[in-house]
Length: 123
Image (cartoon, rainbow, N blue to C red; front, side, top):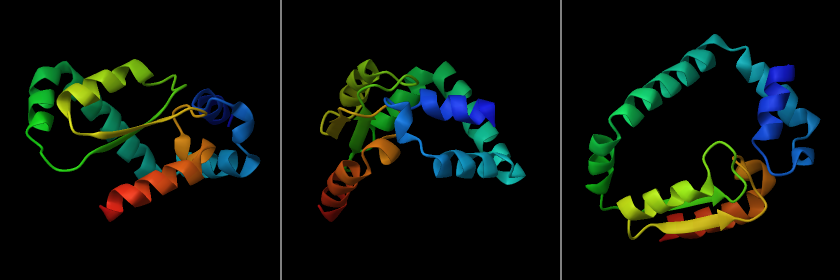
């Protein structure tokens, strides 16, 4: 439980935004074997993809559909500077920088993120 709490608190700009229900639900989910396997697969795939990033980026660049990239300004896991690469790959992407969020804007700024996402999807 301490690992889960530390990870979630590090993922947000303001650790006070993680309420006890978030922590408890994250811990419950961490006990599900299927979810653990899914996360392991995602992370293993990410390591492989980053090793071949030039090829990966070329594949992304072929996509011409709409893109919305929302980023927490205080993300400690994927820094805001990485947004430059997203814009390079998707020059027409709509971007949103959430000023009061880290890696979990859906927890820290759910209303703002939801408004922008709804508007994007309506287009």
